[in-house]
Image 1: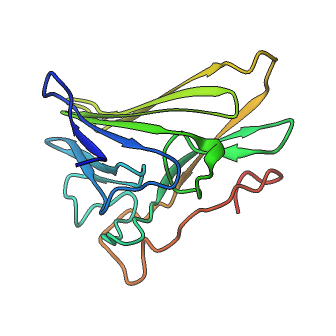
Image 2: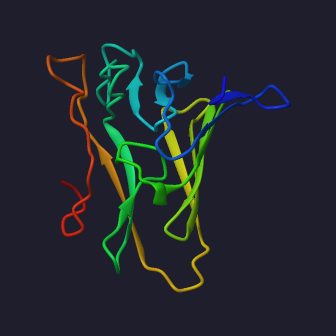
Image 3: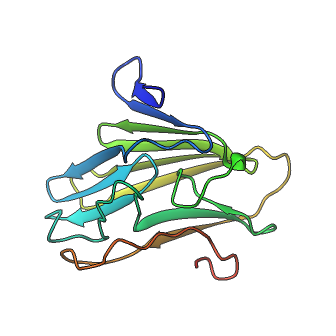
Length: 182
């Protein structure tokens, strides 16, 4: 379809997003065990629950296919320049400098790969098979040819309960280098 398709082994749905390119709607992966789960889209938007995906939300779910907002995000910041970016295509606005993202939705895991600002990044997200644990493993490789000092920030909008009016509409678009958030 020009944006994604199954790999040769038929195990992963691979989505390639060039700068300025998005999926027509949020393409999601549901990863869960009997008591815990998360949904993550190709943009990196996510929400997580325990026991019951409606009544015991840990982070809000907006169910908005137009803006695909998120309540969970990771940010990387270059401490020298103050430049910030995400290891996922969203939620920050992408520019040409952010390059291509390759997203692999597989059974029980999603992987995001990209290279930006001289840093190659790979983020693997999955839910433990038994325990109520969501794991995000971020691997960074410095390809810039110079020493770098980076900071990693995690953002979570906690709700700890059923949906409430207006939840899940907050969208993080910029990282304040002085406070780590905006």
